[in-house]
Length: 158
Image 1 (cartoon, helix red, strand yellow):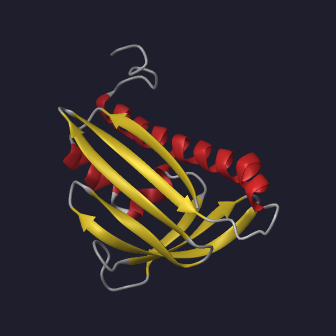
Image 2: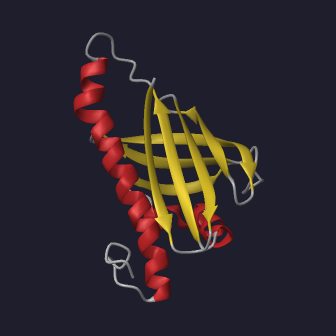
């Protein structure tokens, strides 16, 4: 099982970050490599909600469906794929004073005998890490724009 983890600190209260990041209608705005989100259950938020979507992975577009588990407002949730290559995600939100740390964890297995580990270390894991980091930076940028801060304001100590 491969685990890829990325975190970002966002200059906004946890309730604001959670409200935006947990809104499936906004995921395409900041999450890299995904599109066409739609709920597949009457429930559209919280435990038991399912979302179908498309994800571009290593040059292939996959049709996926994920079910939400362990949903706790302003704390996080887990996503368990029910259609598509087996994987889980975890979204963890932590209040850090007036800022929020969001940590995203992806766990997956590459079901390719013999070459799977090599493909994972050379191609899949670096690609996922880049996608996660870029996506989290896109989310951070959304909140910076709302405050009128330049893109690199956090790097300059602003």
